[in-house]
Length: 92
Image (cartoon, one colour):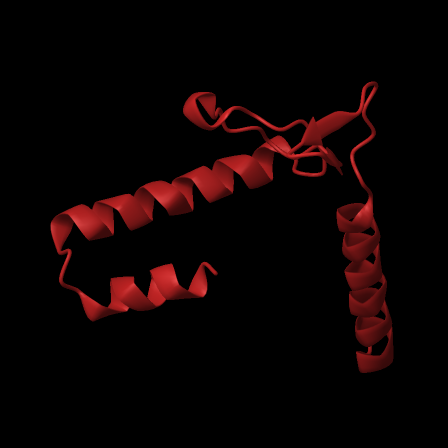
């Protein structure tokens, strides 16, 4: 595959990912929180349960869980490691 074809394929994949991520979740009933409509169900603060986004496939969720567990183990093994601080900062 030449560079132009690779660039074009990469651009198409980027566009496809952006389109998938931009789709709002469709709800059968409107959720309101603090007087505002919400695009997704809003959980009570005391009963928050993780919910996988519909655009995330199971393999991606497994990879994210693995990375999260690795981060937890890094923190447990050496909480003073400055690299961990950088990783947490980069999470946003």
